[in-house]
Image (tube, rainbow, N blue to C red; front, side):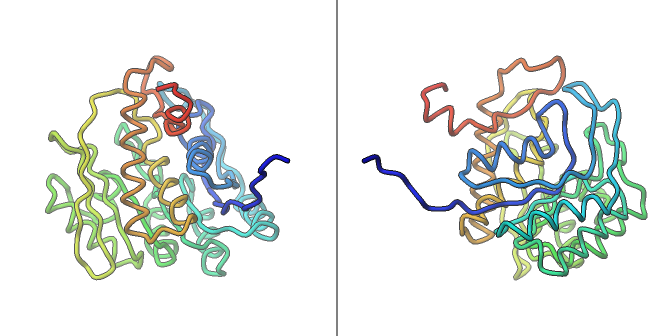
Length: 278
């Protein structure tokens, strides 16, 4: 008789946009959940037509449809952690905040998708304000990149000290942990700043990897944090484990040639390593 494991994996919900190129959004989240051993569920906020070169079209779903998806999932599946990505507009942000306030979105990790890689703002100021005032108070972890942190903290960021000050400003909105991602700073290392609930800061260091294949790194990092939280890790350890995971994912895909622009990271590097494919 075969040895069949019956342990049920924890479940994680992603509330985010769909990336037709497969490198970011819910596609990246579900791949990350899979490789980290958790069951992934999703609520789609927007459908994007994009590839490795850019975004051609965005169709935003009604906030009522986003709510319906989340309520369908949580009414049937016990969710251990939640990750949000592209929320598109104020109505969806407020809907997700309302769901979080009701207790439907435990261990909430918010990746505030606000600024494109080109530097273009993806949300109007009204929607950005909704992030701060309605959603962040319910977040366990918030993971802005440098451009997003600059918008949220309303200050320029050019150093580690600036990142720490920005993290403090964002923490004032209510999230327990803030991770300001420093991948766009110059230097031999990619350094993120983690602000802890006691107000102290911890630097997350990793070697800088020269590659164009960085599409979806923010989505992947946040979804990895949610996966580790669902597996029972404490927030600080979950964030550190996610940093290690995304660093390997970038390194593993550094030489890939998927598309002609910014390719995806290797979400399944652990599984491919175990199969002897790396």
